Length: 420
Image (cartoon, rainbow, N blue to C red; front, side):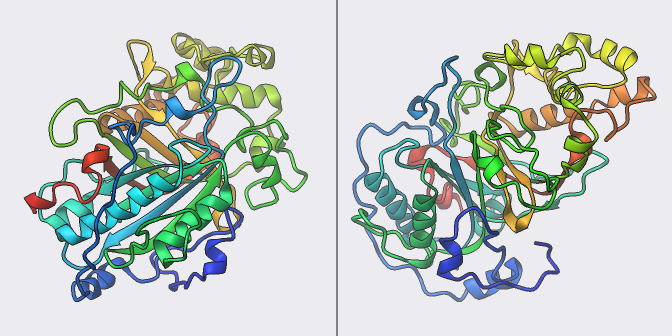
């Protein structure tokens, strides 16, 4: 939704509809709403309640709860939701207690893991600068190539929810946003006295789900997405050695120790050319490298066959470079800098990706994204341009982007509030 679109009212029925429909953005313009929120009554006094023992100190510590495939690659939760909020009124300790009470209620209601519920709370630049009046610990997002002009979100809070049960995510959202009773929950959940809901983004990842959702804009009508495909573009995203580890992306010291940073991008897919202009060999070349064959791909176990050392040959001999090939140059000691928790979406009736990236510093995300642009190769090879024969760049458009910081679990509710 653009800033010029009329406001939408989201009913509870639409909230419960799941990932098949867009759950609309922005009930009110955020700046006007902030003025209204400044006159809001203070939140009720609630107790945070007990927290189940044994939860990891890191909010982003998900991997130990995930199943593994036969090669040891983690299997991502099948469904995700991103809920965006602004702070209602002047932030106080009561705001923090109310949010913490809701999050602890979820922790008591569901085991930590995809069979129950996983979630993180991330805070954006506007929370620090506008709500607390302090310097933001993270930089504001911006466009990272000449061919993308994303709108930059300024939401205060992003809750990322994930599990294997889509209806559970819908019910959790309805409880947090609308105060709808949540079966099995034994405490406070409604956040509306402390937070103003702005937008929800939905999605999925895993074999069978993209094929079941492919009758949307951006995908040819003949149903080219295979039932075995875990994502709309047909390839697996979460190979173990193609991801940074949770330990490597964790902040080591300071007020956000045991936390990390998060970049969230809303990407629209244009897959008519992907499936109608390219054969399987062409898709493999652009996703991985032109030196990689479909037979090579069948032997992948834990890392993408990207061959970054052969990128010069890719440009000069084949006139094509691969997405994995260019981004693999942004590694530290042979390992990627970012941990991707991206998922497909059909929000708005169009195929897309909500690209969620975790990294120790946002500079690591920028470095990785810059490597994907392959600027040097564009200058050296006439057949390669910013969106032509250059990985997957011709098939994606970045609509929105924002940066967040994920504190430790202990500091996740209104971090640095006392500093404000």
